[in-house]
Image (cartoon, rainbow, N blue to C red):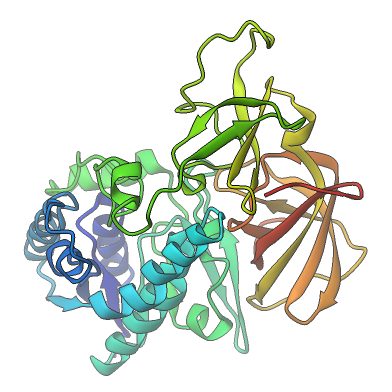
Amino acid sequence: MAKKVILGLSGGVDSSVAAIKLMDEGYDVEAMFMRNWDSATNNDILGNPDLNDDVCPQEKDYQDALAVANKLGIKLHRIDFIAEYWDYVFTYFIEEYKKGRTPNPDIMCNKYIKFNTFLKEAKRLGADYIAMGHYARVKHYPDHSILLRGIDDNKDQTYFLCQISQEQLRNSLFPIGDLLKKEVREIALKYDLATAKKKDSTGICFIGERNFKEFLKNYLPAQPGNMVTSKGEVVARHDGLMYYTIGQRKGLGIGGNHDFLNEPWFVIGKDLAKNELIIGQGEDNIYLYSNHLIASNCNFIYDKPVENKDYTAKFRYRQKDIPVRIKYLSEDKIEIFYPSKAKAVTPGQAAVIYDGEICLGGAIIDEVYMDDEKRRY
C-alpha cells in the first residue's frame, strides 16, 4: 500500500511541482493549504483598523493552490493556524525588535508551524510523511535522518530549517531538493499549472507589499534618536532603532556633510541605552567586521559539531560559507570562531553550521566580537 503524504501547498510554483514529484514517486498525495495570518482580525485586536487586509493575498494563493490540486486530481485541505502563528512566530518577531535585534521569522515558522502544527494535523489525517516545497534534501536511515543542502546553491533553504528537530525531519520529504529552479519552472510549464509563471514570493507574508516602517510602527511605538559616529559625533536623526539593521546602507537619509568624507554611510551598531544608531563610512569600515560570536537556542538535528573541528557556517541567508570552529559554553550556548572575519553579523539572525553538504543545525546570534571588543549591537 502506498505511503500517504500530505504536502504543504502554498499556491507557489515550488510546492506545485513537489506534488508532481511525489505522485511520480508513487505516493498517495493529499495537500494542505495553511492560513497563518488574518490581517483584519489582528489589526482590530491591536486597534489598527487603518491597515489594509488585502496586502498579503492569501485568498489568491489559496485559489492558485486549489487550481493546482484540481489539475492534478489531489484533495486539498484548508486549515487555519492563525492563533499558533501569532503565539509562536509573530510574538517572537515583535519581542526581538523590542530588543533591537533583527529576527528571522521564517526559521520560527518552520520550527513551530510547518514542521510542528502542520505535522500534527497531517498525522491526524493519516499521513505517513509531510512534504514541503523547500530547496533542501533529506536522507533517511533506519535509525536517523540527515538534512542536506538543496542541489541549487542559489535557492538552498536549509538555512531556514536549522531549528527543526530530528523527529520532525524523520517525518519529512523535500521532493524538489534535487532540482534547479529552472527545472522546477520547466516541469510546471509542461503540466500547464496555474503557478508555472507565478512570481516567487519575497519578504514576510504578514508584511507583504506594505512599507516595513509603516507596518512595524503599528505594533511598536517609534522612538526617534540620534545617528552618531563611533566617536559620538551627531550626524543625523533616526526614526527608531528597530527600523535599521547592521550593514544597512539604503534608507539612512544622510545628505552631504562637509565635516565628513564623501563616502557612503552604513549602520555599524546600536546603543539601546542611549537610543543611538551608530553609523560609519566606507564599505570596509572596521566596525562592520567581527571574528567570533556567541549564540544560544542551539539546535542540532542529528550530529552535534565537535570542538576544534573545521566546519563552515552561514550567518545570513545566501551568504557564502565561512570557515568556523565551535566551542561549547553550555548545552544551549556556543561560541563560534571565524578567523577570516565576516561582515555585518547580526544578533537575532541564525548561525547555521554545515559539515560539507550536511546541515547540522544552528543557534541564534546573541553577541558579536572582534577580538576582545564586543560590537555594540
